[in-house]
Image (cartoon, rainbow, N blue to C red; front, top):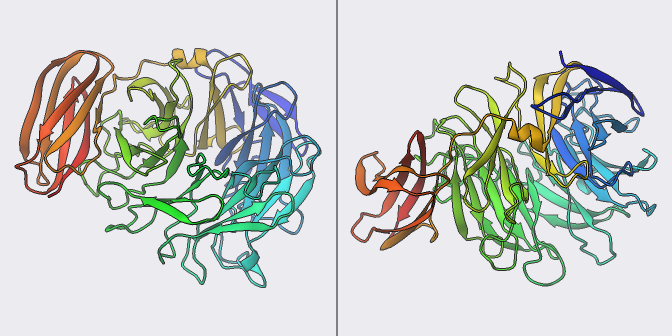
Length: 538
């Protein structure tokens, strides 16, 4: 049992572990501990609410039991103290309350940024006659400001449309100086309406825009993840990326991501994995990162935790794709730093902070380790090499979900260094399901060193016709072996087998005489191995 410090909250009590030696600065257990509550299912950083100068955290705690309502908590980023406890308004109770959380901007004009909390209707029995809601609360007073349901919910909601499962603060679409809020309705079950993302004016509640997928699949989970991009067409409004991880793309649940004009809602382009995998779930996580291709726009990371470089439908190694937000072209493919066939690398992503001081935003990604533990890996945004890793402090971690539902990096205590916030949604804390850990720089350094990472890169994205350009990036020198295999696993080429120094190494692979099809390029350096697909076309 961790030592506990009991703090008063607005509507309850919070138990916060006292700061001890590494491996973490502090942890927060579920303040309202009830069976079936999932504390940490969603986390969003919000502007300073307690006046200490640092950002704070909004943490959702939906319930997995339909008879219970969920909660959300505003947590002091520096200390873990509970500042506010939010619950669904009387008469609008929902087990899904807290499934979506986001900052909402200054809704009521009092100079303090407020919060939005989604309450999707997750169950289809006695509560199916109620619509999903998004509730806006004042941070200054804790009072309810507005509640919205989908306009189509009247007179009767669509069962399972999951309105409010994702909420994201997006651009100022109408030029009034206030940003709008995107609300996802991923439509978990096929019904009369298609999945969609509704965009609302936070001050009036008026719906400004509706984003819909360009196809008719009703259960593609469009709206499961939403990312705000930069202004790609210089019209003064930032564009919006929306994932549909269950989209059928030649295979079941292969996944797709769509990018829309933020002002008009017009589809600009769609993305999919270069070799769609069954259950690949391309788009499970989206993260805006730095300008990787030098075109003046920040680029997009897309997680595909079910993707397998060997195209094995029974393996879920996971891959992360870096794509140009401006053009949609694939810039790099990041393979899992571990060779675990069920690692689900990329199930959660964060990539908007420089963690190693080199001026490039780095990547935080959740995955499972071969010993059946959960971990968060930090990868260099410059080289893709492993910077460090975090494992759950819980010794019985096989089902804790550590890092599964999103990772946040912020300077929470204004010390000039980045803290890392990791939810562990299924961990059995002192008050119920869910613990949120905050790791400081000292704790991260104290972790056992991660295995050396290696990365294969195709600077010219596949498909290739006559030559394929590859870039190997090694964080440390080692004996490298590069092989290419056909769809049956037979080795067709061995372009490299020699020692390599640390750093980047460019290769050009002659594929002019190869039969069209899908190949796997595999790099082995010491005990580490990574692989990625290469498509040859004519």
